[in-house]
Length: 292
Image 1: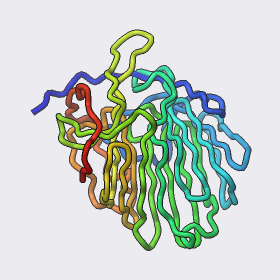
Image 2 (image 1 turned 90 degrees about the horizontal axis):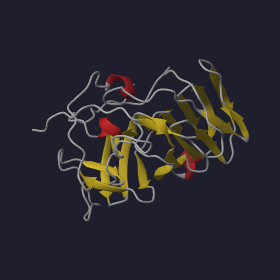
Image 3 (image 1 turned 180 degrees about the vertical axis):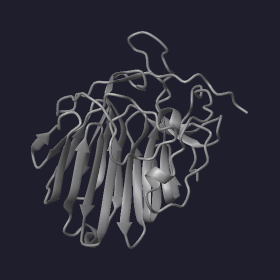
Image 4 (image 1 turned 90 degrees about the vertical axis):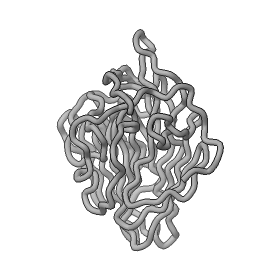
């Protein structure tokens, strides 16, 4: 049995992805599922829709409803940022910025996921529109309506924790393909036996380059992994299920797996409080064989 390590709190991420930085604070509304509920402070999202960038003031909402959207929706925060491509409702270039913060896991902009793409049919994508969008401080909820159902993306501007998830509301299962960014890989955590991803760079405890080890995991709900390589995973997500992303200590805590919840899972399945956290893996190596 592993001994819980000292909880480190290191943060930092300065985003240089074309939208200007943001500053400020407060989690409101629905947030993605996470194990400890502890994420960075000072997150602040700005969003670009149809060429117009909006960054609501601290404590204020920005809302859109029933908007036709073309191209991409760009989401940029202090700690992370990403693009949503309307053509396939995929998320591209999910990036940790490396801004100064006690929980940061990188010290420069780092693409964690090159893409997270649902395999939707032409019928499922027909008539795609932005049914609703809400941005408030460090949280974003976007719901897309199509001719066959709904698709929801939720995000939190934190350096780690439960910071991202995609939910499907279609009649049929949907396949998701996750592709890691350059330099990242999936590996088996020797302390938990579970699959994590990261870049293998050890933590730095002090100084201007201080950061935690980059560790993450795919977080499924009512979903089955169908394939895995060192850099990609595919998942079959049932109607009402979701694919989340968890970073940092929450990704390695000795917790139980997700339940088969299909309603408000991000709230009902949080573990409030802290769980044992094993040591960082030493020199993790990319997976060499397909693993379930």
